[in-house]
Picture 1 (cartoon, rainbow, N blue to C red):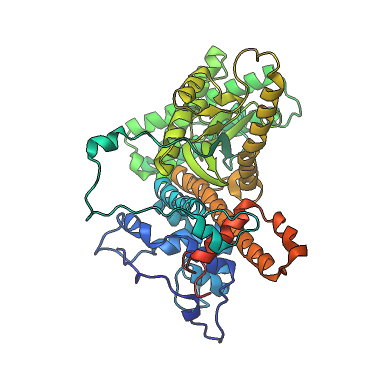
Picture 2 (tube, rainbow, N blue to C red; picture 1 turned 135 degrees about the horizontal axis):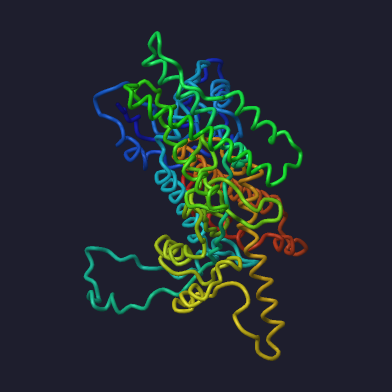
Length: 537
């Protein structure tokens, strides 16, 4: 059952503190609470719950807010709950009306939050936040040096808004004949891997773990139909363990020794699976297995099939290869990097616009990211209403198909063109390629921020839907950080403009404020406090 909270954002001044005082409006969590459209997506979240049956579920704001707090602080589930219990600002961020020294929920609830908040829903929230941020920047007129904000607003040509009551001067056919808007902006694309938290996989270790799990399953089934004179099937588990350790403990085992050990583990595993089939045919019900071990049995059978095929045909590659019994959805992703040529996790493709990132694709199977370029550009057009002027990506995106597609849509794809440059044009081509590389560094910095500052370098969630949500939350938090940084720069610029004395000798001081900062100053002069996301200021 789901109960919607009262509409409207609670003011931080109305938050009740039993020990006296009031919350500060300059706190980072108070500002973050104003940036997130909580009520816009509560209906989508509530659809998965019954309206009348069951205990009341935690609200959408509590679920999403708890995951944002965990990602932003970099804490465990248990530590996140303790931080919420001790900090009144975090409780305000979650939508509570008063401070309580009791934990609002158990640490295990964060696992349920990750399952309830799907990847699509988190991406929708992220898209809304990015849309609001970019809309505020597009609506900001730039203030020229030596021009006041009032003069800048007066110089702007007013645009007459169309009204439904006024008759339209053009019919529908004229609207269809209107030329498309010109290409604007820059789109930066890149792909990476979010590694999962698994043991570094080797075939020998995987088979040993599968064999040990099959012995545990065999014990469950034998106990279900055990009789006084019935003999337990032989598994040779001690011999199999010694055979595995004999090779696993060697510092540099040869390929011949490794292949021999793999063959031994495959035969031990085949024996155990045969015993399991005979017990099931003899009356042992699979229903006696806990859900965890039944799923593990299905994974073990697939692992045996794949490893036996690789062993028999002396191959090293197979489709949908399983590398972890605990996380069978994880696949090896070949990246070709010097330090980590193969990574194990989800492959992600992102797009970056004005410092804000969007998670465009997440897949556990390996794929060629160059095929995503047309779809990502079309998504850019759907969000902004026009195609980008240029697309900045690395060399793997610059296929002939993508070059032709971008040329047909009037989009410049970064990097040097195909063929030999014209005489005297090599310097210009090199200069443009260098400028494109500098622009593309922004997306590399986003991956670095996600993997060094946040949890993108090791996704701790074990289930595939939970891991997808955790990855999407990382990009959501990075965009919120970017929005907070922009607001901080706004008020720093305001302070610099206010304290700077006017006069002929100080006119040059405004030159350090770039065009973006001057635009924020103009926005402040014509916007309300709620539009600036600073309530009660």
